[in-house]
Length: 279
Image 1 (cartoon, rainbow, N blue to C red):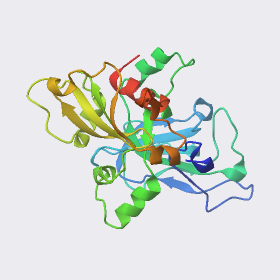
Image 2: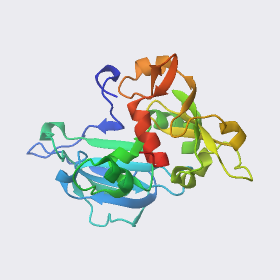
Image 3: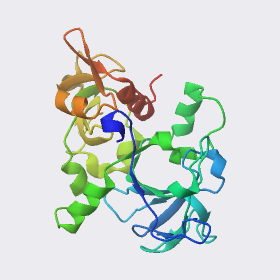
Image 4: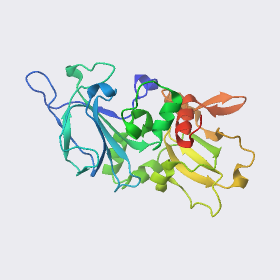
């Protein structure tokens, strides 16, 4: 979050400790946890992230990703599918970027930790006709929802959380809603620990979902046909909206007033389109 909450910034920017005689950052960048390299973007111009690396952490519950962006160089052994240990060098801090310029004096590491919305991001990208090729598969920034890495680290250090699921369970919900859909998003197949109760013996007819203000859907409850009877198709029915969070976090719009109630804001609409292949 930037500009008093009006500009969204997913992650944290970490400044350099060392510089060479030309003023370039020299800090090595290390893997936050053991994991698997899922994406390496070695061309600075292909993304606003510049050169970046995405790791997935299958030993964690759920298997969060971490992202390391604006790198000057990426270590040659960091390749998709490679296993990395915690603390392994991934590259060197830099100021690479695509579509805009970061001066050397503002070199930094952009770091994220979070969850990927869908494996089928390419299909959503094509439906939206955004122009240009998606060079990053499901690890495109538009498909990634991060949490506050500083808060995560502080709670982990204080012993309040042992796994990412513990941290996610403590998040405040900006919205809670129900969706009527027989579709089972791959999101919950990849992150099953976010489902609050066992799936019913019969078909799942919908979901009750809580979202963080970033749009990250961090709790899922399966619903039966009886529980979704009368709900509209392809749109959320809101049970709770926290207006105070909406006022504080103005960079993301999840719900807007409508006819005495609420309807999905543009950012929640995007997440739901990706999750349920709407639109």
